[in-house]
Image (tube, rainbow, N blue to C red):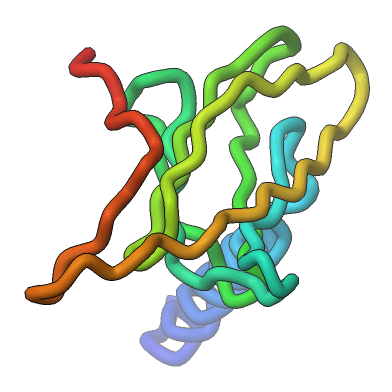
Length: 128
């Protein structure tokens, strides 16, 4: 096999890999547990941190405020969402069998208390 043929085959493999990965990354809404994090004015909060089930399963929202957890099994799941300058949100959501759940979570602005700090009236997460 010539060097030209090897480069062609490797290029095709890389192209196929990138195409499958970009399709997955651009569509968090296809996951069984997915949603959007919005401000109280309805704007997407880009980079909000979403934690699933008190674990290391976490992600930041995309440019549309979207998040998705493709491995979420049917049942109740705990979500904890934070974004600087906004009150944190935590609550239970339920994923039904054979369906796709899309949640919209609205975060309220925090109140500035001075010295660059924010008052966050939401309870801090438990230490797990």
